[in-house]
Structures are given as C-alpha cells and as structure tokens.
Amino acid sequence: MTVIAFCGASGGPGVTATALSALLTWPLPNGRRVVLAECDPDGGSVAAGYLESRVFGDRGLHHLQIADRRGHLEEVFWQQLLNLSEPEADANRLLLPGLISPAQAVGLHQTWPRLSQLFSDLEQREPGYDLLVDLGRSGAAGAASALARSADLTLVVVRGTLRAAHAAKPRVDALRAALQMHGRDSSRIGLVVIGEGQFRPRDIAEELQLPVFAELPFDEKTARVLTHGGDGGRGFANTPLMRKAAEMSRTLQALAVQEQLRLHAPAEQQRPTTLLRRLTTKGATHDTAR
Image (tube, rainbow, N blue to C red; front, top):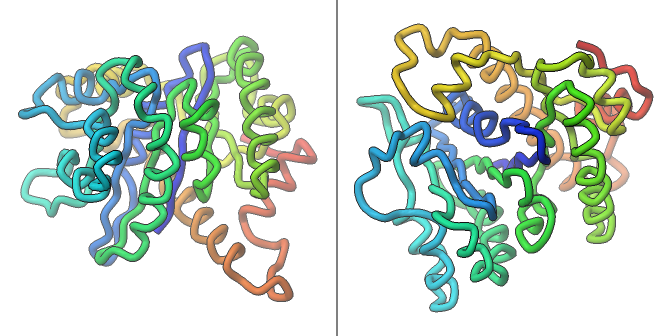
C-alpha cells in the first residue's frame, strides 16, 4: 500500500483536480483499491463539483471527529466512502468527501494524527489499498500536516508562473523543515508542475529546490469537468490531461513502492540508485527537464 499526499499554495494550483485525476487513473492490479481522502481543512469540493451534488446521504470527513472521540474511527471511516468506479466495475475507486465548512476543521485537531495512522494501517487490508490525500492549499501546515509527514510521497502542485512559485516557496520550506524535525527524509517531497505560465518545469524545480515527479498539461476543458462536473464524453480518458494523469499515476505508484522498500531495507542494503533518489538528485542539481 502507498500513501501519497497532494498539497499546494495560493494561486489556484489545481490540487484537487490533480488528486482526482490520479484517483480516476490509478493502476489497480490484482484487485487493489484506491481511496481519495479530501483532507483539505478549508473544505472539500469533489461532491459539489465533479459529482455535481449527486450524493445521496450525508457522508464525509466531518463524521470522523465524533467517531474518533468514541473510539470508532475505522468503523465509521468505511461508512463514509463513495464509489467513483466505472459502471459495472468493482468498488475499487473510492472517495472520502471533505469537510462541508472550514469551521469543522477545528474539531479534527486530535483526529488528524490518528487518521494518518489509519491510512498507514490499511496496508494490512485484503485486497490492498492505496491512499491519495488531498490537503488542498493549507493542509500541509498546521494540525493536518501529520498526513503529509507520514505519507510515502508528498506532492506539491504548482503552476509555471512566478506568482505560483513565489507562493509555494514558504510552504515547501516549512514542509521540508517539518519532515526533518520529525526524522523524516525530505527527499520524499516532489513537484507536480502544471504547464501554465512562462516558466519551464526545470525553472520551477530550481526555484523550489525540488525534483519534478510529474508534469500535467494546462487542459482547461478537461480540468473543468474535474472541478465542476459535466459530461466529459467518451473521449474523456484520452484527453491530454487524463493521458498525462495516467502517466503520473504510474510514476507515483512506482516511486512510492521504491520509497517503502528503501525505508524497510536494512541500512547496509540501501542504495542511492532508486528512481526516487535519481529524481531527487536531479532536482538538487537543477537538471530536471521537460
């Protein structure tokens, strides 16, 4: 199982659309399942956006606060999931809808770390689960940052503009410091660069001192379906954004697996030649290219 967190900063980075595109394209061999958990303290948007409020019943992250206090976090967690799988497919692409109001985030202060542990514990489930965590623009800071610290990979979504890079810089520095403070390797942080703006991915990588793990095109029409809903048509899966999202998902899954193997390998067996290490080295030397 892998846990991958997506976060961003101000400037409209498209964190939720990126995380949702990963959910819809995530490789699921051997009966695996994937869950997208909307853990943005500012509130979720998939139910009202992509799903166009076609959700029956009140389900979502806000129910986990009381459940955690009563010791029923895991039991209630499963009751909150929505099935986003293709028709006639197994329930293998699941969504935990986010908060209805930012005010609800206050009550989750003690729940974030336990939710993080729950996500990690799902590795023992059969069939296996992968967790994608949408932290939005502010979730990588504050109490919800426990989810970013415990993830196998943390992706910072940024556009190729000066404004986006400027807004992401302090968030990246704070996240890197938080990981190091808790004894975690900051090399697990990487970028998803959206191709809007005058700067190339390598320019953004140099500015933020991070490797580029994935690039997504600025495909406004497809992105609008992910953020506002609507019929993407039969060719939706073959649009430029979704094709690159599928490529991104394969890459992130492979990187997360390699990171887990590295963490669990005996120290004398660890090698700095994994794809994650190579990407990190490229980011540090400013060689990440489009």
